[in-house]
Image (cartoon, rainbow, N blue to C red):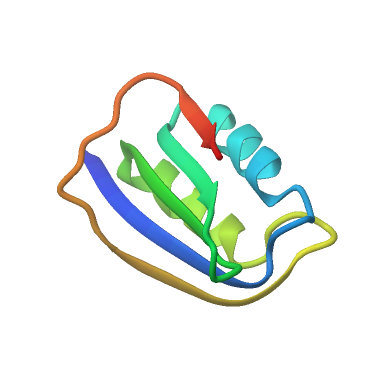
Length: 90
């Protein structure tokens, strides 16, 4: 079953390659969507894919890449449905 989520990650998550690692993780599970840095220092993700794959991706977001320090991960349903590649937005 396909699901569509919005994810906001807070902590030391910018300048640590979070977006690139997220794109690589998404590719492992054929997920669609995008990731971008926000002006408040958080990382924002919209992700679509098979439920179990999205759950594994969100679990990865709780730790992130090696240099990241994740404080919070907020997840909510998304009405937007993404297809195709998982992109890094600026």
